[in-house]
Length: 171
Image (tube, rainbow, N blue to C red; front, side, top):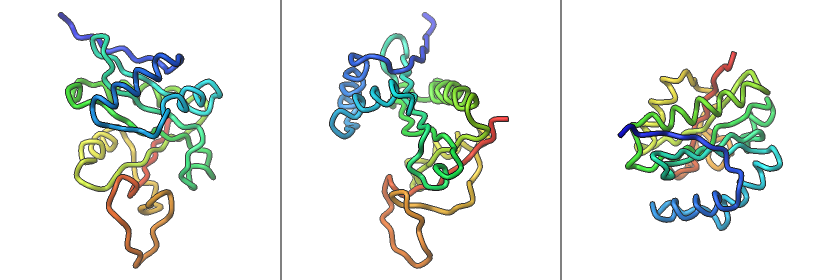
């Protein structure tokens, strides 16, 4: 049997509920009704949420934010790929790359550049490598924590909010 990967945009409340359930199964909790909020933002054109299915089962998802919370991306009107997640048993099957192909294609219709943020600790190593291979480069603005620039001498916690941002030309 050949494994089939299918990518679909979030369009229905049932899909949002399914995502909530699947993330809970993997002990990856989001804020209450996170995917319901994502569905509304998809309907409003503020976000694109793509769901990856592998042999008919949810394998992960990723988002394209047309209005980033990162100040530099806001100012430059750079859409942001956000919150890539492929569940562990589905990794190394090209799913993340297919999600990125689709999101980069969508972003290219409105922007010449796309961006993303990535964490700085070891768990983000595979993502950091993938982004480099796909042509993403540092934006040159330094690290941020909770979307605030880290000033020299400031102490910050190394957590999921400590990020560097990368950009890629879509031309």
